[in-house]
Length: 150
Image (cartoon, rainbow, N blue to C red; front, side, top):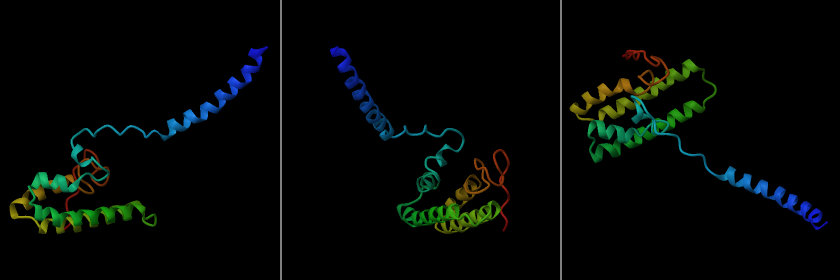
């Protein structure tokens, strides 16, 4: 008889414990994504890569150049975020605007570089921005980037 009295209390305790266990599971953050692999992994460390670190490594930027380039990259990031959030533009208009943003910011960065750095930067340009390898825009995966329209 005592077992029959204890059974409802045991079931009640179990029912109260299950939601608490699930709350703990929900509060656990998911594991971080695996590191990117492939040809352009250095560009994929964050949504837009760490552009300043990448340029510093590839171009051997001075501290002064880094200080001048960082705000340009920050502005480009803000412009791209605003463009992605703009639901009034269609896909083609967004690609055109993206190309415009990259071209403008690349020109600003290039102006801060030495002639030797500019040569290296020009070789890097097809690998970045819309239409470059590794992107799924104009030029797409496996296709050469579209030539610059100057």
